[in-house]
Length: 308
Image (cartoon, rainbow, N blue to C red; front, side):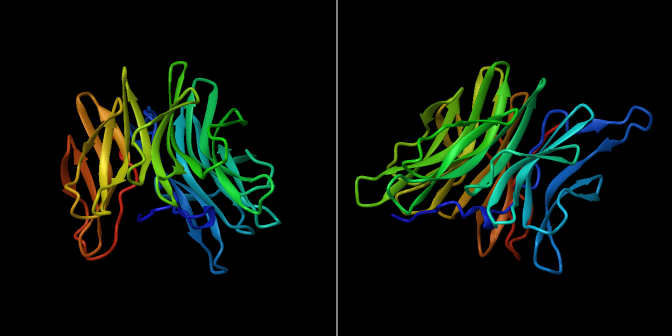
């Protein structure tokens, strides 16, 4: 069975923008909108520095001494929150959040870890990601899906198999997390299952027949939307959206594709991602109808979408 395991922390590409409903801040005096983007930039010493851009003006979140990436941004009022990671002196990735540029470590630097998403609800700051855990009586480390609320960690998985939390959304008192976890397949290997956790309780979105990932979650009223992909029987990655657990394919399964983000505005469902041609083409889907954002001359991917 063809796998598409997520890359180790040091090689994960940063999610360039994970927006909140408050990200398009309006300045009262001018009517101008503030646009926030996060990611990283590699210096001449080949070390990536975590950065945030506000209206295209860059601010470094790390000093360039150790490898770092910013993966997600959320703006609440006048406060700007960023998730990501930074290597410590022992070259171990430490999961971190930054509030207005001030870092908070979510892990102690003993095990590799990364925060992949951040979400703010009232006074609560949520982050989602993973931390590696040594397997008892073994040299193997397993990736454990985790959520941090105001810095306090909760494990979503037991560490028997690799897992990861990729996206988080808080709606009232409910916290939704999208991600994936490997399980033992019927053969000799492992299968990746797309999952959603509501208040820590997991629901599988796929049955384990084929590898799958969940990459993004969005809650609109009583409806829960999850984006991701699943391999078909031809080992082709099919971009999918699940609404309340029911899957809809947005690609036909002839070319590798993935939805990396989902956003709901009124009755319209938007998705961002890619579909392979000669190269991967960045695409946006509105209610399942695709629009290509790139011409296919170079590899591209759309990683976030926001509608206002």
